[in-house]
Amino acid sequence: MKGRKPSAGAYTDAHAQSGITTPLPELETWPNQYAGYEITIKIPEYTAICPKTELPDFGIITIHYMPHKTCVELKSLKVYIHAYRNIGIFYENAVNRILQDLVKACKPKWATVTGTFTARGGLSSTILAKYPR
Image 1 (cartoon, rainbow, N blue to C red):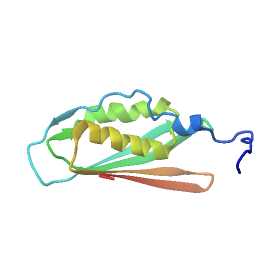
Image 2 (image 1 turned 30 degrees about the horizontal axis):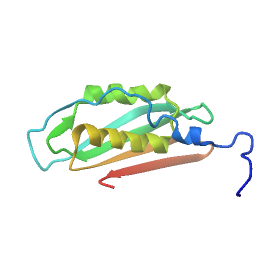
Image 3 (image 1 turned 90 degrees about the horizontal axis):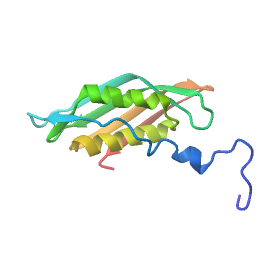
Image 4 (image 1 turned 45 degrees about the vertical axis):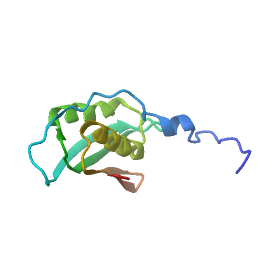
């Protein structure tokens, strides 16, 4: 309601924006040699910190894309994903940020990033972000 003060423990803009601009390792690429194929990368050990509760979030990140001129280099992707473990970021934001950073690095023809997160409090979430939007 308009004019209400946030209750103790309420979510804030700082919570919502946490981790969105945190510096992360660069995603490297290598020149693609073929056209018209798809790549799926499954990362079963994603972890980050909830910026509100400071509890760990666990999930599986799946990246599916059609490369254009370059492909993402897997070791740099591993280093990039593991950097999330110390970041306070909502997993909705993490999935969208991973997609944003992948698109910036390798400019695929299209891409999706799916995060399937472990249940907490009896609820589990699957987040899907697509490029182009």
